[in-house]
Length: 222
Image 1: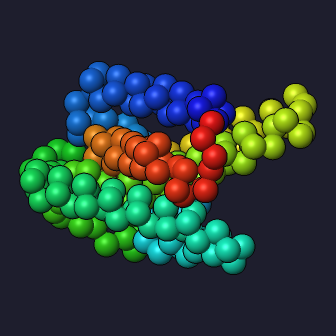
Image 2: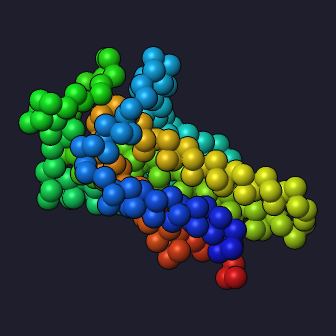
């Protein structure tokens, strides 16, 4: 199973390294403007509503395994969300970092890109709770996908099936990253906030699954 999940994990690490490189190369405010250099009305609508998935729709989707009596899967997600949420709130109240709208108020020569109809927050920017939720949800999905691919690979071998699995894993990461970027596009967070939020959202499910997978999925030891 470790090999199957590595598709998602390696892709995330590569993405994270790229983001860290960008954070090192550009000043914080200039980078925020660069990442918001292309706003369109269609993107405004899309990212405004896509970002709200982390507020309640993803929690509803996480309840669906209960319909197939997979209560432990939903419980695993809930545990990840609670654990990640606690870490995020602790960090938010330690750093008390200002949001982009507050930071840009001190730089009148720079115009903060905003989306009409989005209420901007002013405090507790670091790290991004929405980004954490997105990455927790999709990392949990990647873990479940890897598990079910692992237990069925001997019965259904084939290059096409492997390709489909890889594409699905990368798609899950893309959806998580898109959620993180939505927070930057809406000027609710800086890239650094989203980056750390994604790390929490990735590491939390991985650790909890590693130490509790036999109980979560009733697995026999590999």
